[in-house]
Image (cartoon, rainbow, N blue to C red; front, top):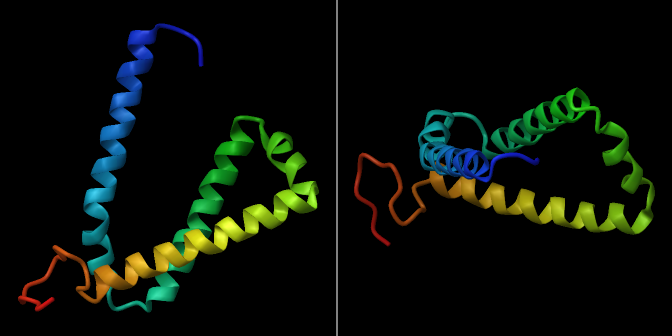
Length: 113
């Protein structure tokens, strides 16, 4: 992205605030989906993230740039391992929020640490 550094900084700050805002409200969303199994919520997160990122990559005409490295065995192994670790991280996070196991969880009843 080339252009005015001031504009890029403004866009960067806006994206940062949006990311922190989404992250801050995500536990409220997870509480709203507490009736669904934790693993199902994680699977939906993975599936819809894949769909959205694939659509954005296709729209920008970068599918070949993403697909090329995936033909290398080592790249696939590293990406597979990191994917599993991120999925475990999200599974623990979702479980913690849904079951009031966070430091300051959204709960109507007090919890004892």
